[in-house]
Amino acid sequence: DLRTGHVLHGPALLLDDISTVVVEPGCVATVTPRGDLEVDVGGADTPLEEPPAKRPRGHVAGETAWAGARAGDEATAGSPVDPIRLSIYAHRFMGIAEQMGRTLQRTSVSTNIKERLDFSCAIFDPHGGLVANAPHIPVHLGAMQDAVRVQQARWAGDIWPGDVLVSNHPQLAGGSHLPDITVITPAFAPDGGAAPVFWVASRGHHADIGGSTPGSMPPFSHSLDEEGAQIVGFKLVDKGRFMEEGIRQILSKSRNLADNVSDLKAQVAANTMGLSLLRALVSESSLPTVCSYMAHIQANAEASVRAMLRAFAASTGMGGRGCVRARDRLDEGAEIVLEITVDATDGSATFDFTGTSPQLHANLNAPKAVTYSAVIYSLRCLCDTEMPLNQGCLAPITFIIPAGCMLNPSPTAAVVGGNVLTSQRVVDVVLKAFGACAASQGCMNNLTFGDETFGYYETVAGGAGAGPSWDGRSGVHTHMTNTRITDPEVLERRYPVLLRAFSLRAGSGGAGRHPGGDGVLREIEFLRPVDLSILSERRALPPYGLAGGCDGARGENLLLLPGGAGTISLGGKASLPVAAGARVRLLTPGGGGYGPPEGGGQGD
Image 1: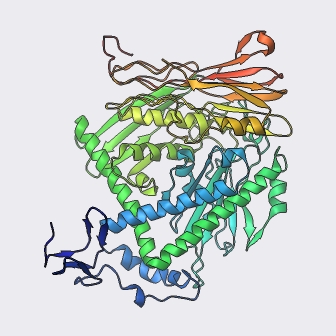
Image 2: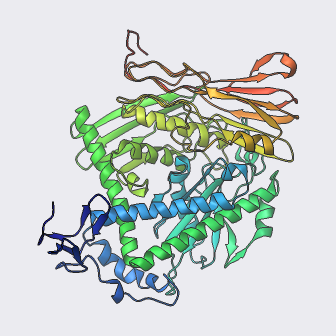
Image 3: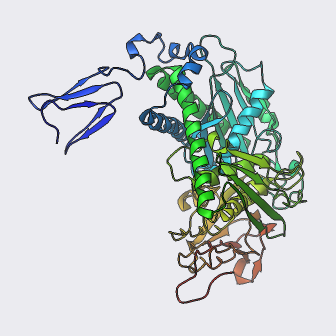
């Protein structure tokens, strides 16, 4: 539709049948008499930023572009936000995290990280706030910013170029549970600044770090000491030197120490890739620009959450200020209680967990960092704008989590189940309060087995809850988990097992106008004696339906004895030795339905 003499000021996109032309901000495109497009770079009256030729560059790509960060950050951060660049930088940051993840997958050796992809990578601002992440494991991502900030405070004044930090303590170091080990790398400007200008981190689930059972997921642990090695803070790399002897000593009770060390080196490599890509991004623009767009991305997430809260208040007729409430019980009777007070005037909310059960003499306690992860994930799901999950989502939120409750336990409390089970139920409670969807399977169906020479761990999919306009998905990992199941060929080649069955559990999703998703059936036969552990939920109380939808089916864990000698129900949590020829069969929960089903009948 363009004709000779037409002038377009960037930003603009010009599309025809065979090409796309991007007219960037600060540029002017003119259609010539021959029908060509002539682009005057920098032809607009007010260019977005100074031309690249005016920026200092050094002999090492990206390094001198870091210089002067502190001097220019404030002015740049206060400049108008260009929406196109905001989107570009958001995707660039997420792309860096994804490249970190690919590096970690390629260089790791354990089944847990290489095959199941049970890891997360993210980048953080100078203050340790989450900026962007790859679409990895939600329960990791919301908690990792706490891990970074704890190490910032712990090593203040003693962090140097070439240092890499490691931690895993759930209550004292922002961890999720002990098998999730976080590796954190600071990035310094080469101008001699004392404080890092960025941080990158990777968190991976290590299949064994000691503890009372193979796989370091004991179903009946009562204290953190029973769950494995604890790291509040350690320099994994000290000024460029990998401290292998020190980390081997810390993880000496692991049943597969060689895999631990190799995977930690892979996490260091992933972080190094992240730093390299951040330097390349800085070299393309400038450090003040990159830092400012980190802040802009967080501010955009904050604005999105505030807009969502205002829209929710308007849709429910609560006026300027109102409350919604929800609660749910775990199979053992412990209760999660939530009251959300929404202030529509400024788009803020208070999440008050007062009334939640006290700390448990079991391992379903969830560290505060895990509760934050569940809330930040839920808020991100409730926003209909495209943005990376980041610290800005929590800026409008005030938390009240009473000390000593199961969501804010003591430093010695057992928490291995809180990360994988309670976190799922916190998400269900938050989404229930907003009326967003029915309950998911509410569980990760944790299965571990092994002996003194190895440990294997997997989480098994189930049904997703349905919502106002969608059916629940069947056979998927829901909410706080996003791992992949181990390929049958890999499982059977590396471990003494046969995979006898793996299929959808037909009819396990709750009925409704929109039905819940079905769970799965998974059956594994053991070829030699092993210790078997199962840590699961929704075996007594079903995933609830919403708005008249029916509940999903409860899960079930069965042990089939060798030679057809009988079948034993294991309940939701079990740890026992099993003989060669025995089979474990997991029937995972379905998701709840939404709305009354056609033909009459409805849920509670």
